[in-house]
Structure formats: structure tokens, C-alpha cells
Image 1: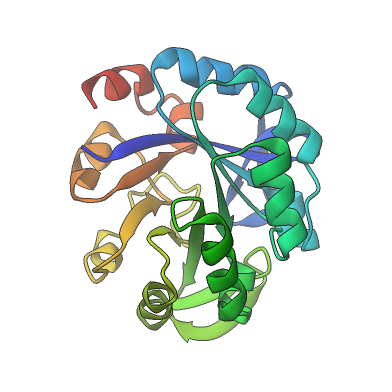
Image 2 (image 1 turned 135 degrees about the vertical axis):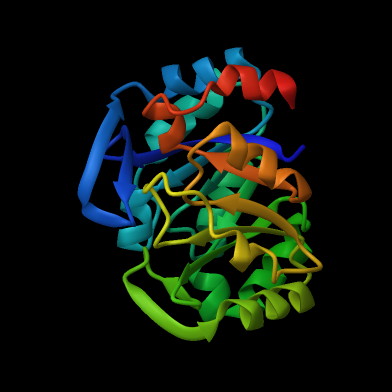
Length: 234
């Protein structure tokens, strides 16, 4: 069974979900992200995924206060992504906020040497890569830019850099409840894949069994899956 990782996406300090990464198509699910995180922990979650949506758009950490509050409320590990594009922000989260893993997306695509430096400094266990895919190509800058790089080529590059964990998202499925793009994931080898985008049912969680992890967001918020039951099964 893949590691089931509940997701909290932050915008203006609130837990929200976007539709296909569109910032104008959001639904607010909680004004208390720390309380929501505690609820996930009480259900039996063993890891938490947090994204600073404002940070991803701005290119710098924005929702640090909310993320710090989430970290303080939890005993389980958590990973954070969104706007982490320099060594200072990496250290802010790993050493200051004390999160367990940071996700490098845009900077890993644009400056691979930086990703290698961060792995050398902090270890591959604490530095993951975000691979956000639109039409087979890697998107960056909060999904607003197209790098033109094929996702498999990018993942091969990440492996050579020493990256061991990749959160792979098909943007066209994100927030749609239409099931993940399994054909895309089947092409990936040699890295711990965390499936992200489109999870809609218990069946999708079962199908993710061959991967390292699976992120659950909107399916929980919309009552499409019994997350506590899935977590106990896992």
C-alpha cells in the first residue's frame, strides 16, 4: 500500500483547493489549517503534504505563519512546497520551521545545480522534487510557465542529481476528481513516485499501491472517500 498523504493547500492562510491549478477557481475548505492538520493526524495519517499556493505564484515563502502553526500542532512528519527557490527558504523551512522535507519545483527545473547543492547539504531524504506536468511537459512558476521539457527527461535529470522522491502531478487532473493519469505514472522508473492529482475514490488509492505515496486532497474534502478507513487499511 502506498503511503497515503493528506494535502493542505494554503492561500491567504486558508485551506483551499484549486481546479486544474487555476487560481480563479478555488474552493475554501477551512480557515483553520492547523486544526485540519490535527484532524488528519487523529485519523491516522503518517505524513502531511502542504503547499503554499501564494508562495508558488510569488516565487517566495508567503504562508509561513500558517505553516509554522501546522508544524507546531503535529507530531507526524510533513513536507512543504510552493515558492521554495533559494537556500534561505530551504533553511527557513528545514531548520527554522522544522518541516521534514521541502519540495523543489521551479528551481529544480531552472537550476539543477541548486537542487544538487541542497541534497548535498540536507540529504536526499529531506529534498524532494515537484514534477508538474501539462501535456507531457514540465510546468513551472506556480504552473503559469511551460518549461518545454518532457517530464520523463526531467525525471531522468533529477535522478542523476541524486533526487530520490518526486511528487508527480498531471495538472489536467488536479482537483478534477477524474482519477490520476495512470498511463503517465507507468512510464516512470527509478525514483520514489508520489502520485498527485485526480484521486477520486478508494479504488484510486488501491491502484496506487505500486508507488511510494499518494496525495489525497479534494476527494476527502468533497466526501468522496473515507480517509480514516483508507488510512487504517494502509
